Image 1 (spheres, rainbow, N blue to C red):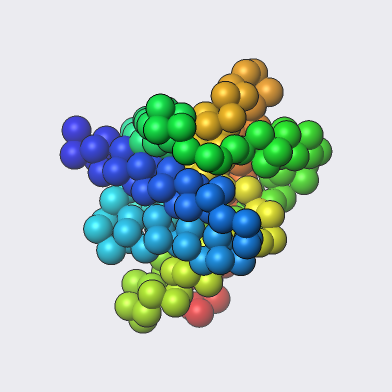
Image 2: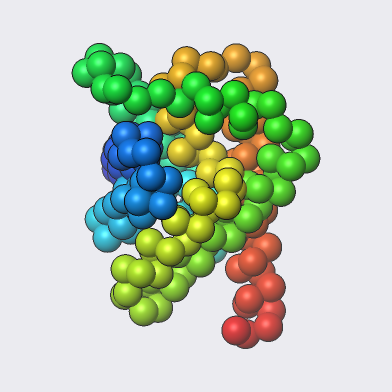
Length: 193
């Protein structure tokens, strides 16, 4: 139950990051402020799928991944509902249209890049305790258009575009995020970097 609660908290924080990003006209400032979500998640030790998947060491940790994804979805969905109830002047319609009309292979590649960025954000922060190590990868993944599965859960929920295609795209993004983080970690450990 603790794992699920910490995962819901992480989803809520990503939802807040998404609200901040969508509230601003300047994408650079929006991307910078979105990083508040990941900063809070790492410092508070909440469970974010993209921050945990690259560091799986045991079967128990692996079995927690579906719970983390579920909790992240509950948190992001809750934030999207609250944003609509509060009638916030934000929209994810254009973002979702662009994401869902991209080639699925491109989406997978962009998700791999995001997985690498999230792995580096957590790993570099754990080694340095410097918050810049968290902020910069977030700014990079947003401005570069990399696909973050959990952030996209928030955007899809806010836009109300959930259907079979959106679900399949999220699965592809989850797989890409995982592949990026795991393969980067694997080669890093093999080369003892």
